[in-house]
Length: 282
Image 1: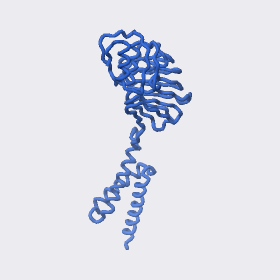
Image 2: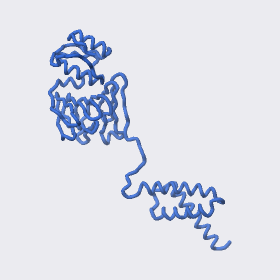
Image 3: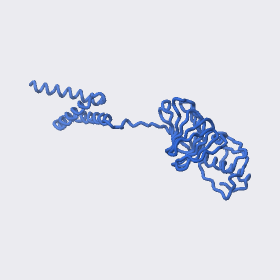
């Protein structure tokens, strides 16, 4: 066999071995070697396409592997393997309790959903996607707990509070225990136990003083509400059930005392309320 022919076959054998390396371990090859292989692959496909169909398919596979590796390693490229960074947890027609990996607990109101970062122990991040959720956050000074709502951010170390997503822009935050930092375009507002904030156009409005029990009243099967103003009661109802109540002229400052029973329907509870007040709220 002529020496040039033997040398040619040896070169081809070396290239075949390099193609296999490119296919199995593309990240271990330098950019220059990858480019040389790409050129040699194109030449061999053009010259021997009809005679060597198997080489064609190996070559195309190696091209794909190398191109992918080059693309992911290009300077300035932020592309990577697509992974699902969030786990979405939802509730249907009733509330739902969720225990997180760090010991924190989330109670979802009916028809609500929260997204939890998959590597939660490393980065305690959640997103309230819909409805209302009460958070009882385990303390960890080194890793604050964050909740994204629309384009606003709530940050805590360890506390208990409820967030309600009002729409695609605003939220209602009610703190039961501890302190919560609300960060939005108007700046950072510290909200403490017994306070409530309702944002307007993603900006923090006046901080209101409220009964801390307002944060988690709906976690009880039955809740005795003593001298609660009608306005606050309607706000709680609309927040929890995610409804907009209709009524005629009412005195929102009027105080009522009643037992709200979450084991029966909203309509049945409203019948009790209407009997007490004489209004027609539905």
